Length: 87
Image (tube, rainbow, N blue to C red):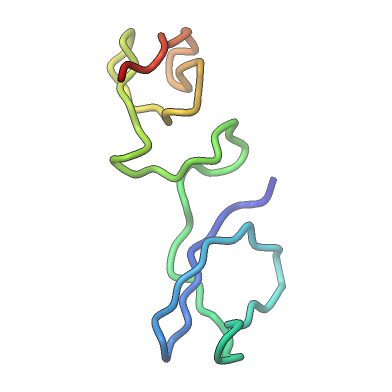
């Protein structure tokens, strides 16, 4: 899995998230202009989660009290099994 990046079109400000290939040039579909890298998405590869680090996609591990993505069963910090998510 490649690293995920946030790319932005300079004139329109339109953004996309992509798994970027080294040396590739990414163009905006609408304007055709070259997109600029504005950030690297967390978690970094290799990670079993595809969710970006955002308040909406994180939860606290009940064992070590560290943040983990909501789609993981095991905590990436302490490697212990986290319980199911509540409603």
